[in-house]
Amino acid sequence: MEALATSLNGKEYDILVKTGGGEKLFGAVTPIDVASILKKNGFELDKRKIEIAEPIRNLGSYKIKIRLAEGIQPVVTLHVKKEEE
Image (cartoon, rainbow, N blue to C red; front, side):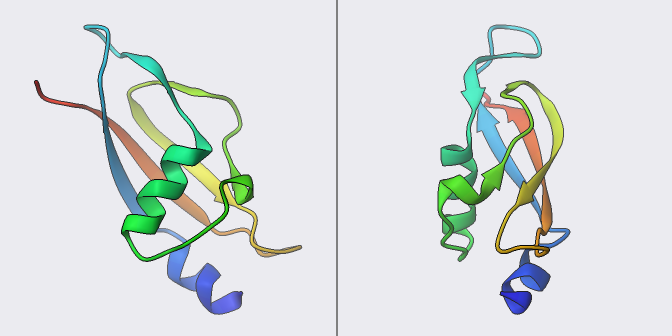
């Protein structure tokens, strides 16, 4: 777990989303979306381990905590960007 936490901690990922013309997203970015991004980058994690304080509904950068075990909680940064049409 410690090695996984070290590998994850401080990493940054981008997600492209559709917006309603401004900063507001259609829907929200969920732990399932974050788990999918992590899986594409070689980290297979259960979506229940991913902590998002409140639903991500706007463009921007967000710190996402991952609960691997008691006291082992790496943080990744998720950059939510507008998908070009």
